[in-house]
Amino acid sequence: MKTGKLLPAAAELHAARRRHLTDDQLAMTHTIDETTYQRYLAALLAGDRAGCARVVQELVAAGAGIKDLYTDLFQRALYQVGELWERQRISVAVEHLATAITERMLPLVQAQVFSGPTRDRSIIIACVADEYHQLGGRMIADFCELRGWRGYFLGADTPLPDLLRLIVVRRPALLGLSLSIFFNLPALLKALDAVSSAHPDLPILVGGQAFRWGGLPALQAYSNVFYIASLDELEQQMLAYE
Ligand code: B12
Image (cartoon, rainbow, N blue to C red; front, side, top):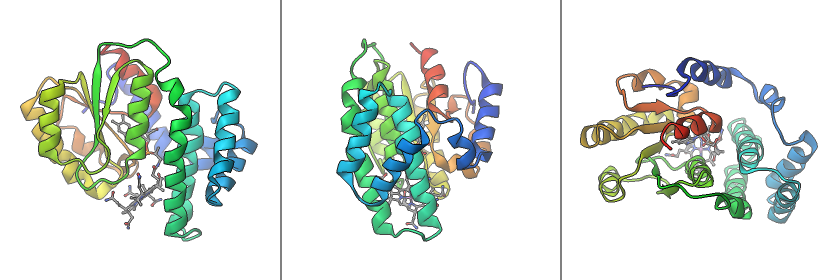
């Protein structure tokens, strides 16, 4: 397992820092101002889709890019939703509603996704079997398409035999696998074994929150697997294959 083809040590350090930063500390590095973020979060927790859409549209009109919106607005807000849910400050219903609203915010920025030149490169992105957290993978697919790649996003809970068949058909330059739940690590390892054995030259990018709680040592056995901790690292990694 490698944590970045170009700067493995820096990537390792960056990943370690991210895992130990609190949300308040991370807020200091956010590109979207705090008042706007809090307005979005309040609308999200209130189930106010129109209010969320207004904030997103204002930010887009002011020139905010996909990377900022995805990480500093959508991702940050959902991480906070997760913490509120974990501390039982909000119900499962409110968390589900916030997630559903977020999924409906992504189309508001799709115009940006296809705005650049296209490249003759493709990536398949999937959540492993039993993994239902699909928004992160979807954002990664959008981000790859923003860079001109064709992004085949398969969504949640992808059966391994079907993933293997699609790799044969589409012959992607990269495969991305998403894992949020640490207990799903065996499903990821099973996928890494099967894909690496059938396609030893296919680089596999792995990401998701399971690795905030460990899991990295299990990837060390694979020389074709790269753990990606951020969109910046993903950008670096893709550059190497363009
Ligand atoms: C929404 C949500 C759900 C929804 C997901 C629906 C959906 N449509 O996706 C549902 C209701 C299904 C759900 C279920 C569960 N959830 Co949940 N969920 C969340 C929540 C609130 C938001 C997830 C999200 O979308 N985050 C925003 C995205 C953008 O962030 P991200 O996934 O981290 O993605 C970014 C990076 O990680 C990375 N990345 C992600 N994938 C990939 C892939 C590649 C290739 C690359 C390069 C990068 C990359 O790039 C993304 C963009 O920056 C989180 C809270 C949180 N902290 O995120 C909990 C959370 C992930 N869930 C949690 C838990 C415990 C569960 C359940 C076990 C609860 C239960 N008892 O039933 C189940 C498990 C279901 C399953 N088998 O998968 C825990 C996980 C703890 C852990 N890691 O073990 C969290 C962290 C909540 C918490 N604070 O405890 N959940």
